[in-house]
Length: 145
Image 1 (cartoon, rainbow, N blue to C red):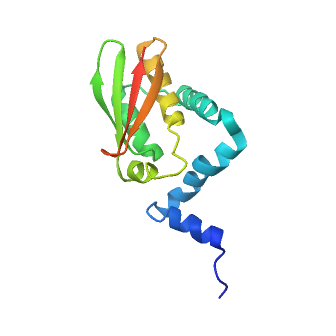
Image 2 (cartoon, rainbow, N blue to C red):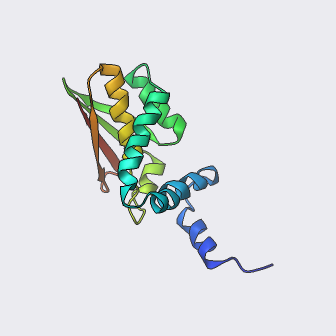
């Protein structure tokens, strides 16, 4: 049997805690798209997230949570809702693993998706920013209308 190529061995090692059905997605999001999109990667991912929300508009905040889980983005929860603000928290095994990636995993696709879903649900223009929290192993999204 041939020895495994070092690059492939490193790939498998890097994603050893990821279900094999998701490794292709992880490589696409962390390597191929950033390589293809270059310095505009985050902006384009954000726009792609908004477009995805227009293709699949959610009927409620609960449906957004279901969509995230079904898409394999991990478990998102609405933590706080104010008049013009929505605070979501993303956590789970996949998020914990993604927080170890170097370079850091970009959550711009998810942020764009949340921004547009809130725009559609509340009929007010919304934008979304996110912060990662290594200590608590979460990603916090703040959507403002």
